[in-house]
Length: 449
Image (cartoon, rainbow, N blue to C red; front, top):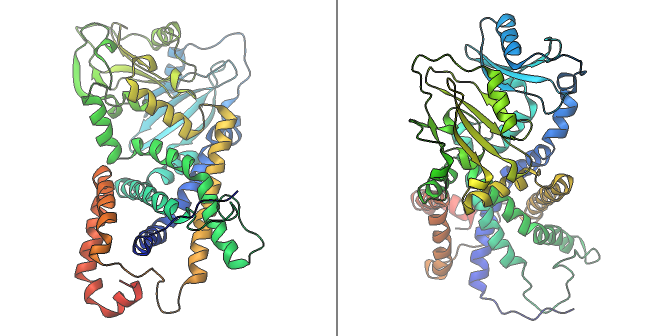
């Protein structure tokens, strides 16, 4: 099969190659790290089952402690700690979990619900998969790390666009070197093909992973989430059961809940001298309302606080967020997948597909293949540059003139508007170029600017 010959503008080719080159050199290490940590996190459930199996599994017995009896047991065993979360097991062979807070420390206690014995304790900082998630989402560097990851993800889109242009055949030839590598054309050709061909195969999946990951980011994601909520695509008025008084807090400030529910207003419990409902009643309510097994109950920490129930289910359609009055036991808000707007449902599906849970093992393996492909593309790209680089220069294509760059810069600026961190980084690079690079002959020569 032959591909029709395409004529290209040499100056445009050079411009795109230069942007692709610099974006790759700068962000390749971060993208490699994201691919590695993402590959591991896809199998979070399986890994934690192995790591904490002794904490998870218990032998069922005839009698079982009630939720309130278990909570009382926690108070007896940990008198200086405050219980903040309760997680009943998914089945009869699963331990229950209590999240306790003691001063600045937070940890999980795994309790045998039949005997009342503690089968294990795990400090938050010792949860390996949580550390992997933190490394993947923010490089373990808080807000700064989150912004760097978001910037790398956005620039990865620039890499994809420019890479597709560079990959697309310039001359009439077979599909060798386009969709399959050429193993018999020498090392130089093979190095190029081991970068370009795998990149072609993972492009669609990589764009999907980037776009489904961005809603979690702290800058673009927060803005997108606010826009969706304010546009009416967020939670609808029908989610409220009656006229529940609202606090000034969003649900994400008091509990870990699905993305679509993070901006849900937190209602307040009506005190009026009433006695708080038992935890048993809250569990009965959750079971009666059919919450997916494995939900977490966030215990109220204030007098007018509410019980918040949340489930991060493997499938998007099983997500749920519920607020319950701690005194009357009334359901104040019940927010499920069916309540989501169109965009909320799309994001929910995107997240579960991104995490590899929506379609089980098949989902995990497809996502793993994309991550492994990204590792190969990053490694082969850096190796390709290393073998081609000149001795006393970085090896970047020559900088084009302003007139030559005009059309392409408009495209880049459009992406800068759509993804603000890209725009800020372009501005920063331009200022750096004007203030230092263009004024320093040695640096200018090394960068071929």
